[in-house]
Image 1 (cartoon, helix red, strand yellow):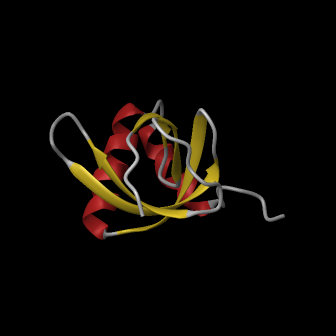
Image 2: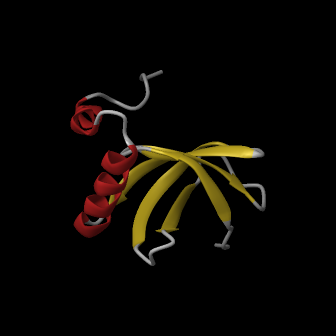
Length: 96
């Protein structure tokens, strides 16, 4: 129920690592707005999987437009852009 600002350090098609200005609750679901310097905004629903100074958020769902922007962003900075889509074929985390 509150807004928390943060800085993204690493992003993939399945989630991101970031630092936040305030503590966030592990396991909580959240709505993210990822805004690029260009003004492009991506809206993502996620789940906080690690909290503290450095937190991690697993992406749960997003609209098609946001996914297209995210995919283009990840491909742009990837060492092997063609391998990016392979990430979707494997789960992000091992089941416990």
